[in-house]
Length: 115
Image (cartoon, rainbow, N blue to C red; front, side, top):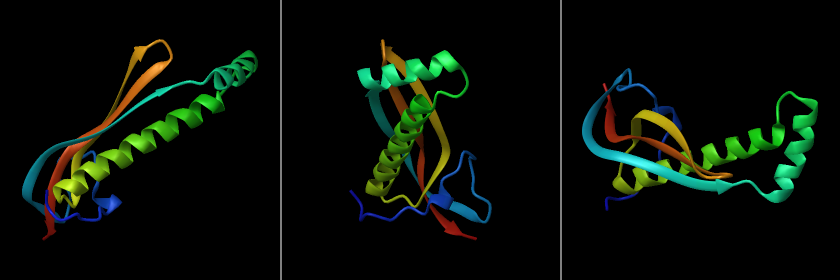
């Protein structure tokens, strides 16, 4: 593994290029995977919110935290490879069992230099 590089979050993009930068080296696909389940208490609380309709904030918070955790793992993976940027960043989610969801954050780790 290369020397660890601190990732500048402004150099993570869904685009396939970064304006003002050129790719020096492609380090390959990086990912962060989180598998989460809903707790019984969380389901009960969300059940009450469902009765009244609207945003189910307990599930929203769980989804936001899960995506954030997957994103941070992806960044750690990129940093371990020595990347200073991630291109073509995406999220994906799959329910792998009842109440159990996998969230994947992935992209292409690269080393970029300012033009």
